[in-house]
Image 1: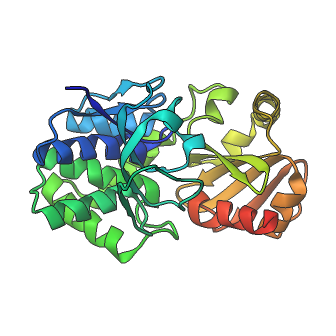
Image 2: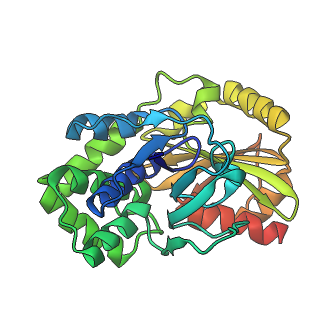
Length: 307
């Protein structure tokens, strides 16, 4: 019996990796024994902190899928963000909390999308509906994904369902929500070992709207100023990435996880970003108070301008 691949998006964040692992656990509980989680990129420090804390091995790397392979997608539905060969794979499940774009299948599938802060919140709902009892580790993975995507429930993407889920899961996982959450976010904010090219690929997603091809990357930090010390090198990496991927626009978000603000570095068609954020870039950058969400604040604003 062939494996059913489960995976999140390229340049995976914590929600993407952990949701794949959780969905594997759910599927196996429901009798789908050949389901297996994979990753489409390197594990970042925040995700590693979670996996080490709960004693879970990281998923294996998946480079491409062959034609006809059954797959399940978590935390994304746009093929441009997915694995090589996805166009010819057989998508049988999608669990996501992003906009639905450029997605079509030849047969009916299970597609569950909800406007919540993390894919893991949706998976928690699936467990409740299916009567699946979550063990400590599974609850811990779900909790960690929610903490990551909602910046410890402070992001504007956070909903009451996310808050309710986080409180319940923290109890099952036997952790203090705020203490554990801050430790996890701080682990992810350690950027000292990344090269500029690695930095802009830690959590980076491509988008295509009305013929405009753009990329939005985001990193979390406790000191925007420390990151900006390497601004020139970061811009060189962005320009190289734009050239290699034929992009029209690249937006790099440096998000302060303590103050919940972001500094953006923008290269390419800067006028789009200036209109989207109602700001004026100076030396390719601008500080935007309260900007923390790519999904809810950045991409919709850019798409509205491109319109």
